[in-house]
Length: 375
Image 1 (cartoon, rainbow, N blue to C red):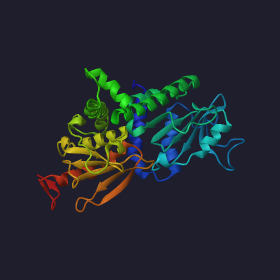
Image 2 (cartoon, rainbow, N blue to C red; image 1 turned 90 degrees about the vertical axis):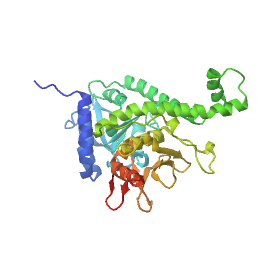
Image 3 (tube, one colour; image 1 turned 30 degrees about the vertical axis):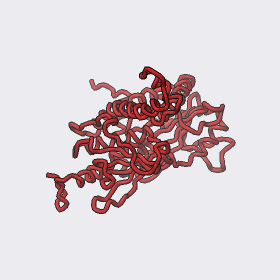
Image 4 (tube, rainbow, N blue to C red; image 1 turned 45 degrees about the horizontal axis):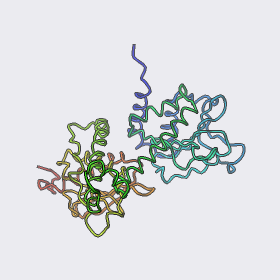
């Protein structure tokens, strides 16, 4: 007898199907039918039973005329979770979802979901009762699933759904994320108080201004090395899903990341965790072409640059991840003309893998432009 696939297996099957089909999905309506409804069904809800899943739900009051949410999941006949859907090509950071806020405010629903069928953002009302928080407490990317995502998604299944349990988790997720962000900012650009705290743990003696200036770069480099270790483990799973073989993972970034060159003060440049993760993904993509230690990051205010051999004349790509619209800038091999492409998640960089590898091959001395062959 064949065993029934568990939740994790079915979720990965859906992710595989999305990756294969999305090139043929052009509209929001098609996204809902091909990606969102199967996801809701995977959570254990009967999408054909209006007492469990109601499409195009309209509130009695509070919404504009004709305004509705795409789907509502019901428990005991009452909406408990609402969905606003966008086309899979939509960038959720730029999406309009004011109707979710309005419906949340005039109803007793506790959870709302913004999705493009690939990414799912979960909201609740931790800041003020019946007022949807402006930031999601959970973000899940089906094409870049993490182990923790599976545990959180299980809590939304029909079998395990419990409002109090999810709210407790939501509070923890939100504040842990905010603390991670604050910690990352301190580690990348240490304040005087934070620097003193860490230096005091490893330095015997008076912490003078000179000692503090000496140690501050060490703090950032130690953090970069730690991030490299963490992301390398995560990338092993991602690379395995891509079918890559014998891919060399990045060495500690403290060995390769150069200081920013040029007139921009270091205090004006903040490298985010997303930029580091994207940089490591680029390294993993091009590892089949070159030693990844030759691929380095140079972060500036307007973008995060990835260079070959730390040479401004050899850009691999530019990462624009600081604003609402995430993009990657790719370069024509002949005249280095930059073309930007939208990203909904850093894992979207894998879609540009061949272009990135071609760029690196062009910088290799063995490359023959006439044939495009590296010998």
